Structures are given as structure tokens and as C-alpha cells.
Image 1 (tube, rainbow, N blue to C red):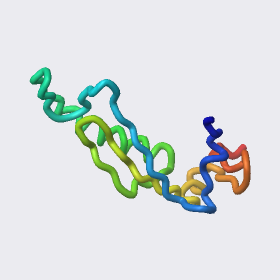
Image 2: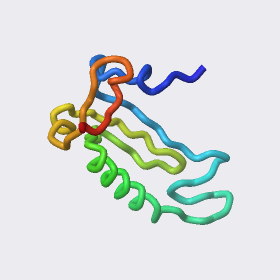
Image 3: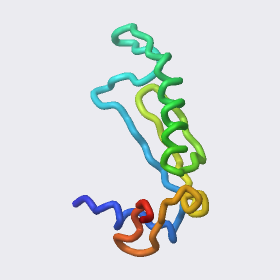
Length: 103
């Protein structure tokens, strides 16, 4: 059974989180699709640019990432001090663990 996000993420346990996004049905995100012969290599730069842009918007640091043919894994680092400078409160327990804007 799925768990809510506040029960899955604990910044006290670790500030690092490994996330993966992948394509379904053997679809190609980047690279050359051998089945169709199409090249999707141009998408690699789109994904990288958007990933770095969103990391700045959400006050996350990217520790590592790789853009592969059908998925991209990312290791995020949540920096409490950077979040505080951006005006974002990072809680310590239960539902307060979620990141939210400070009033």
C-alpha cells in the first residue's frame, strides 16, 4: 500500500534522495531508437536544462544525474540553509516534514 510523502521522507535520516523517472512501453527518451530508426538525441539537452532549472526553483541541489535512453536517475540533496534563505520552511516531524512556504 502506498505511503504518503510525509511518511516516506525524513530529512533527519538523510538529506539525499534518489529519484528515477523512466519511459513506459520501451519508448525512447534520448538516443537512437533501433526499432523505428528515429534519433531523439536532441532531447538530452532539453531534459538537462529543465532539470537544472527546476532544481534552482525548488531550492534543491543535484548531487548526481544521468540522462539515459529511456530513464534518468537523479540524486537530490536538500540543503536546509539554502531553503531557509529562499523563504522555505522545512519541518522536523510528521506532516510538518513537508516543504512549504513560510507565512
